[in-house]
Image (cartoon, rainbow, N blue to C red; front, top):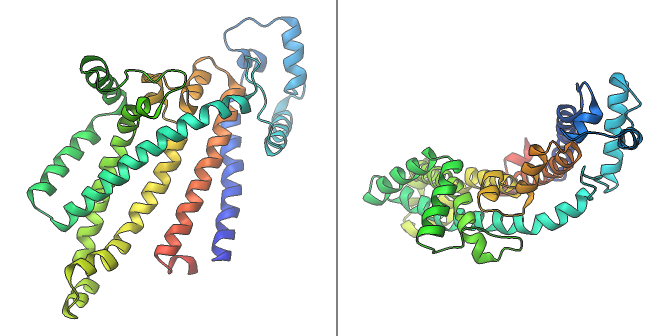
Length: 312
């Protein structure tokens, strides 16, 4: 297991440097005027130009200058310094204020996915071709066919404005109740995918040879499903949920924007819209770490559920 985790950690390091290099290059490389690219459409005074040149080492030009600035950014990042946005605020302070909101939203979405998606998927897999199975397949197909950019405003209008079952917007300091509707919207796509994945996995394992062997030994159906089928069926589901948790923790730009939630996705969208390069690169760098850590947890759980994986 130690060698398995060590190999995954080495892969994470390579993925981190590769991803941050690409993001940094997309934001800052190849610009005709890097200072103007930093400032966006706003005019830059001589004093501001001199300050930005010194702060971001823009006097170093060419390919060598780009890599010098990139490694200088990585050095500060590894020391916990995410830098400043173009508004003058520390990016770390922005993330400290945004993370709790995004974590709450992601946990609500994940809870909805697990409680309703995985549970319904297990029932649908056991009762394959039943009315419940066919109904869930149709409903999940409809949900998967509606993008979040359409589903979020519809849910906000009907459930928040017209019927007033939930707050229409979350506000600056949203409560758990205010985050419930956007959490359901955010988790709806994950719920549909988890349901179909669980249903398929359970149905396939019920037809496996080891299930027939267990039945021939006289084991009751409840024990076969709970002890044997579920453990094997949860392997792809755990993989999906772990990766999906990383995606949810990364911040849902559309959902947070529609419901006015001051989370990570909302700040990332604001940085992209205002062309705030340092803010975008800083947030994405942290999100890369979150995504890689969530994948590491998934790999470890995968190895626990299937011992053959750790010996690959």
